[in-house]
Each structure stands twice: as structure tokens, then as C-alpha cells.
Image 1: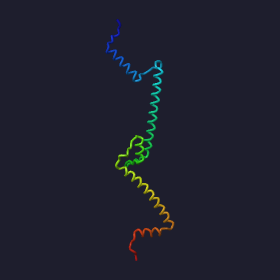
Image 2 (image 1 turned 120 degrees about the vertical axis):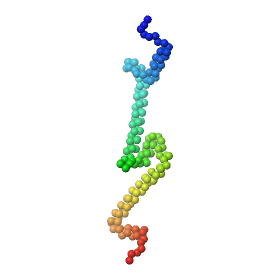
Image 3 (image 1 turned 60 degrees about the vertical axis):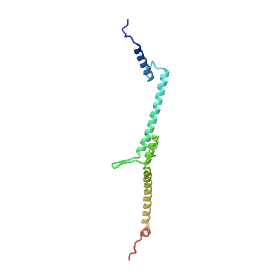
Image 4 (image 1 turned 90 degrees about the horizontal axis):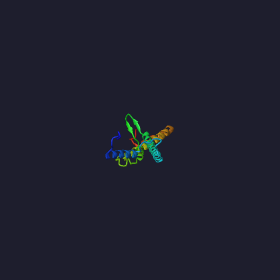
Length: 151
């Protein structure tokens, strides 16, 4: 007789199940015991994981560029419309498609552009006024806001 305990059918099934789980989970191989098939699987796994890491780094760069456009201050955070669109595109969804106030964002951007153009025009007119056209501007303003003649 041996010193080993005798294994019953349940013990054999449990051992077979553990072996099968180890094999399916990839099991650890030693340098001496790895087969070429297992090595091929290992290389394929490494390549797949490298591709996933590169894709994640690329996606992270898209989010970083979008967030870099934000204006964060003590008063709050301004998030440009274009930044939200870029984040939605990176996430594969239309972030602002269902937003009710989307037109508000568009109007704000249009108003900012109109104010910048207006400011540029005012500066140009002011420069012309300094060049001797003050009287013409005064006449134009008087025509826009007629007052009773002074005697």
C-alpha cells in the first residue's frame, strides 16, 4: 500500500476541472515547457494589448486637446462649443444633438464674432476721426439724433 490517499471520482473530476481552467486561462508556462502554439498565442496577445494601448493613448490625446480649450477661472469654467463637439466625436456620440440650448451656444459665438468686428470698425472710425473727420462724424451723429436747433 502507498502513503498517498486514494482519489475518488469526485476528486478526479475536480482535478480535471482545475487543469482545464488553468489551460483555458492561459496557464503559466516555463521557458522549458512552452510550446510554439502557446508562444504564438502569447505574441498575439502582446500585439493586441499594444494596439489597445496605442488606441487609448490616441483617444486620450483627443480629449486633452479638447479640454485644453476650456477657460477655467475663479468665476467658473467656460467650455467652447467646438470642444464639446470634439469630445462627442471622440466618444462616438452626438453630445449636443439633443441639447435644447444648442442655438444659444451658436448665438453666443456669432455675437462674439459680431462684437469683435464692431470693435474693429469703431477703432477704424476713431482713427479716421483723429485724422480730421470729427466734424463729419458729428454731423452724422446729429442726423441720427436730431435735436432742436440751438439759438
